[in-house]
Image (cartoon, rainbow, N blue to C red; front, side, top):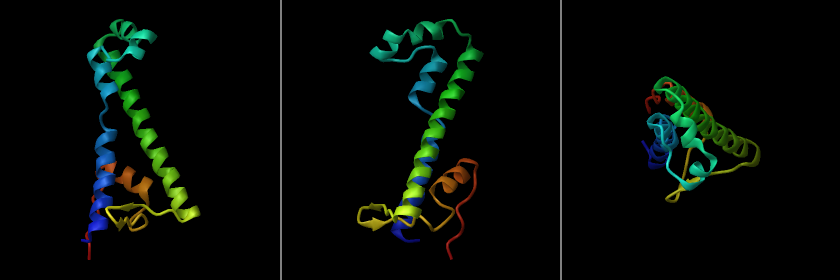
Length: 120
């Protein structure tokens, strides 16, 4: 497999891994999110009033929003690729953005345990 394809797959897989966890969601589950802005808004005071199940549900909502943001960004990049001929180059390698199903679909597929097709 060529280097550009390996890098593309790695980027999509890293985004998938990122979409399954984030610091704010972990903080919500623990009942405390660090940061001055959070303290000023009183978020941790709200979290103290929630039971474990409620914090878990809120944490899942945050993960879903994080996932949605990644997907929306990939949709925009895909639009730029298709409509404006955008290319992405990493380490001098042009990524094969159209080799599989497109960035947003590859992301969703990998997030649902779809296997990369065999090269051949």
